[in-house]
Length: 402
Ligand SMILES: Cc1ncc(COP(=O)(O)O)c(C=O)c1O
Image 1 (cartoon, rainbow, N blue to C red):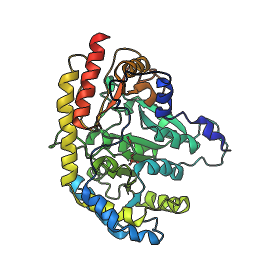
Image 2: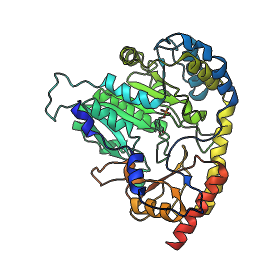
Image 3: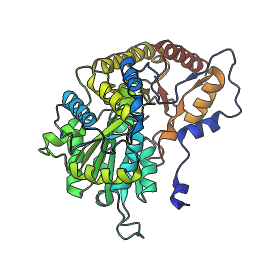
């Protein structure tokens, strides 16, 4: 058995199930789940229809590199969305959702030359804290040391890159960024991304920029930028050391389709494609054809974004008098400071209101300043508008009584 498996922390939802075990919430209230980040809006009918019409194409093995048409649709979307032009042949690869790609990318990139390593030269993978748990698991299973860069209210929920010591950057092989951030909703500016790129050049590491919430943002006139734009602005038209991760799960509310893509540095993608070929994770052709339809259409993504905005507009006025909530720049989470133990808060809210949220400490790790998720909770606005409003009313009632 791979001994590194023992290094993995139980997934947040397993810990949540344990936290709720044995509690009997009021039976007269229907349960509302605001813990999971799974989009619940109706998927676009034309995407489902395209999938249905192409099911006959399951009769052949797909190529790992994907259909040229799939890569072209992803490249065209990048150009419309971010005004960056990438080569569909050498700078784009389809992936079965960003989750598997974030994981496998690290396996392909991290090298611990020679095998046995003293801790002072062991490979290191840096990531924001709190973070999407796959980053940590990917680092550990690749034999690297995860390094957590806190993102707190003090740092405006951005990783403070200046606070990271030079000896950490020297060992860093991959830096994860996430913008808009899960769970904080913070968007990293072009200036921030340029600073990260300068460090990547200076210390020779790769940046894996998780941009899977890039289509969900507050201000229609200010969409979150991509790392690829920062690279281009710095004169790196071959996106050296940059790989971005995009997904249809949130953009098109099709988390079950398992469809995304990676784009960026062609030298890195060539190595990653080789890895993927052996890993065996080609995207089925019907999925690719449905994905092309989804990437080619921006109207449904705008309508989807508008639905999330409506939820924030309806929910925030209910919560503001009792909770320190702000509308995030992107994504679909609230990340309030609940001024008390986040596990107790979550458990009691469930016990009294039959409403499930996620303790913030499950999404972060202890680092220099303690666990930055402590005393915060993640509230996911994925349910239909009316359900989100009902949930906000229950949270308010709970807080008024407690
Ligand atoms: C930050 C972040 N990255 C990646 C993913 C994975 O998304 P998918 O694999 O559906 O593209 C999620 C899903 O919740 C996420 O929150």
